[in-house]
Length: 591
Image (cartoon, rainbow, N blue to C red):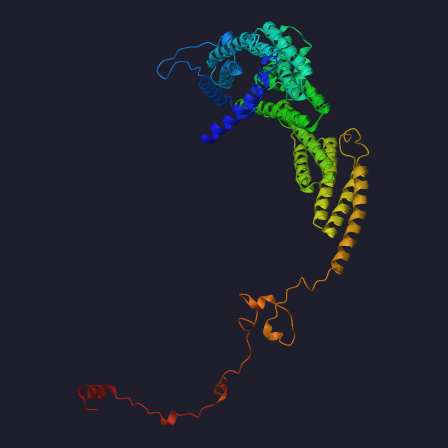
């Protein structure tokens, strides 16, 4: 908490430097104070609750500093700032912070209103309160003590908040007038002051422009819809405008979708009965045109992500319809053999669009990385490596493998040949960057073999690509790859020869550690610092084994070959006693 107070004190002191007293009177950099406070206290991450808490704490500090408290802890006594009281610009700052606190609460409620619609009423009340505070600020700035710049900024701020209220109430004409007034004032200010302030004013104008076009469309200007679609595809119109632009474009496409009933692909006409699929297919051409006209890579990446997200949602809707159709067929015991159903073929078409978009997106990212790879690298920041490109081409090859397994296209030999040819092209590029990764670690032989494999793939593509000129026009040029590989081969051979010469010239004796103990090299003198260390190498330890004489072993091998004489004549023969001998033995007569 102490750190937070220290940080807020720094912000307060920096703002007080800006709230300076100019020659014409009191001055307050309204937009600059707002923007810096928002960026430093939560709005960089869309945390309006944190910004609202900051505004409350700032108000408390300002009131305490000026001695302008509203009662005490037991009782509230409302005080209003009048024109006569404005002898310090901090009085203006109090009203500004009250307006910002109400506005941030309204924006917080707008985020929560997505799941709790009743909060919309509270949202409108807070927006009205913010507009009311801004009107008070504008009236206070009418004082002759306040300079002209602060008056204009206060008017623009009031017009902005008033336009936000009318925009939420869907009063399009009033909202458009307020936003146009705000835009005009900020444009004039941008042309009259320094470049640092002009950047802030232009940013505010850019924020307002989507709202003005949206109001114009709702008033009846049909030309504004094209600008809105372009802004939506390029990521413009954030915050409050994002959801409204999505709803507007979906509504416009829904009207057009009523006239769309079927689509033709690979020589087969398929009826489109799902509204979500109709809307997506109608907007597909616009999305692809916007991607082609994208000015930078970040915009293009955003457009690809938007298109892929829409495509996934459409595929999910078609998949659910497929499950329902499968259950109906099971109940009706309908069996179709051979031809794929229309719904399944539509699913294959949408999957084809998704996979082709993935291939194009990864290829675009690969081109960007290749351009960065050729740039000179600096030590401050690690640049891209060939391994990054290998990963992208792996994803492309995986997408092409999925393309070849689409249902309904197993017997389309032309399609299968096109996919296999594209696979060869991207395999060649993947192999090329694997070779470059081996070059970086000086594995010359492996890199040379991979370069030969690249040439093999490229020549195979050239031999098979005679009848597929139209389908291969979007693919990378194989001829350029062949020329680049030939150049890299010569560079690789030269680098390998130079590396071999360097290895020969470098003496190896100092690099090899001699582990011979001292007892074995007593006749040679050499300075060895390890002998005076903690582990001197004096003798072999543990000592090695040496041969020693052992006790002989004797084995009696002749016993098995000796024939012993018979001893039958010396063995006592027992006579046959019979019953008489038995009784004699019992009674002891025979002993």
